[in-house]
Structure formats: C-alpha cells, structure tokens
Length: 241
Image 1 (cartoon, helix red, strand yellow):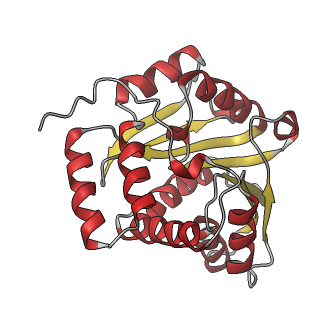
Image 2 (cartoon, one colour):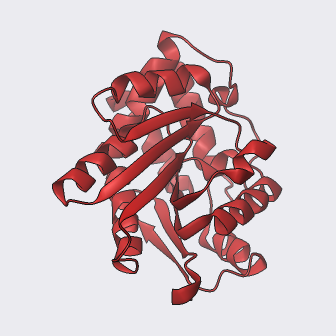
C-alpha cells in the first residue's frame, strides 16, 4: 500500500494531552526510552553534546536543559557521562505533563544534579530560562512549523553554546519498519498509534535546511543517522560563528 510522505501531517498524538496519567502512559514512556536506547538515539544526542563541548573546553559548569524529557533517561545518561569524565553538569528536564515530570524525578532520585520542572515551553515563563545547551530529542516533531520557528528562536537566544535536535526522518520505509517494531516490542495501542503518527510528523532534510535559513543560523550541521533520524547541531556561541 502506497504511503505519501510528501508533507508533514498535522494529526495529533494521544500523548499530546498534557493531562494524561496512569499505567498506560508509564508503559509508553518506558518503551519509548528502551527503543530509543536500543536504536542509538541517546548515544546520538550524547555525541552532539560532545561536539559542542569540544568548542567550549574552558567552561567550568555547564547547564543542559532537555525539552520534552520523558522519563529522564537522556539526562541520567548525561549525568553518568559527566561523572565519568569529571565534567560538572547541571541538568534540567522540562515536560508539560506533570505526571511525566514526577515519574522522571522518581527515576532520577539518585542523581543530585538532575532536576525537573513541569512547564509549557510556549508559555512566557520559558523564555527566561537560561542554559548553555538545550536538547530536543524526539520532541520537535510534535509541533507545527510556525511553532518550531518560534521555539528555535527562543533556543538560539538563550543557549550560550548550542542546540541539539535529534528527531525522526519522515519516510515510508521508517513507517513500515516501525510497524514491525510494534510487534517485536509488544507496544500498547497508544504507543503504536503515536509512533506511526510521529514518523508522519517527522522531517525531511530540506525542511530543516529551510528552518536554518529563515532563522539565519550561521554554524550548524544536519546529518542523517541510523535509525531514520536527523542529528541537527546548531552552534550558538558567537565567538565560534
């Protein structure tokens, strides 16, 4: 059956409901994190952090904000990396769902340098949040183009070092392969439906190039990575642009 992926879909995802809570949501969060780990998604984001840190070697303490943090697995991976490499990191997870943020906080209880906050990133209060690096892993596709442009403007203004986007490639191949993963990982109905919609809300490289152009990003890279996603690193340090 032919699948048209020419344009991004505006179909909503079930998890876009910020009031959602319960065991189904917990199962979805944990399964998403597990799949992302197995497919190298967290490693890809960590690689982006390393690239930015290479260009900012003298920074004593680094604040990293993870937008749409889910169950916090990415921040815990970063905390472990910082400890192993003697890098002082202050890590903040932001999620618009209070139930999700609380769950992430529980899972991160042993990490003293990780904190969480429930916040809608399109509210005025988020514009005042300061950080060195901002992460957006499998989150950007949830937004419409005009929202993405608004959000990236905020990121570029407030991030002293850089922005790391790790998100899905929109393609019929990735869509069909995810259908297979649904069976292998026994994903619940919500995870199956949202995962397929996520792919159709994903990106093609020219779209990311378009955002970069209209936002006047001077120093950035966009690379296709396994498994069917893009790593988009935007350097915001004016001294290296």
